Amino acid sequence: MSVELQTKRLLLRPLQLADAEQTQRLFPQWEIVKFLTSKVKWPYPAGRAFSYYRDEALPNIARGEEWQWTLRLKESPDSHIGVIGLYKGDSDNRGYWLGLPWHGRGLMTEAVVAVNDYWFDVLGFPVLRAPKAIANIASRRISEKTGMRVIATEERDYVSGRLMAEIWEITAEEWRAKRAEF
Image (spheres, one colour):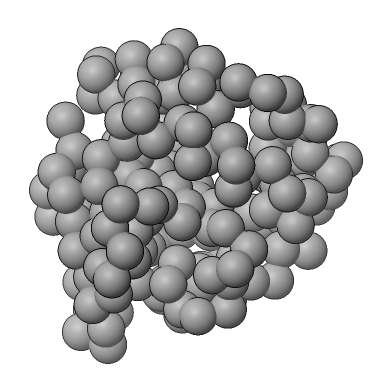
């Protein structure tokens, strides 16, 4: 089970079923979902956040296959503004989304630093990989800032269609060397 994490401005609380209502209000925005995997249903149906949390995310968390947190501003901890998750697997270990009003403030970079620490220092994985659409400039910048490098390109299916994607990677050793910058 995940533990609460903190950054300078954020509380990252382990995902709970009670978070689904806020997610349902914030998440279904084209600017948020267009570069997410095509597994995300679009248009996003009513009640989908609840059924996803109940039937997929929380069971996977309980099995130790993934770890997910809601992002909450320390100044307003009762409301979440997005979600970040870590996932076991070979090439898709981290994903996130952030509500539109909070874009462009560096909040997701803070969250990424915290979960990268968790991935490497608590879970003990040797490498983290994160695919992203090449067109997703903001997400690519976070990967660049946090020391990741592109190891492959391929086509992938996103909510917005089939797009070229990059697979970004960082090793535990590379992360520990980069971590001092944050």
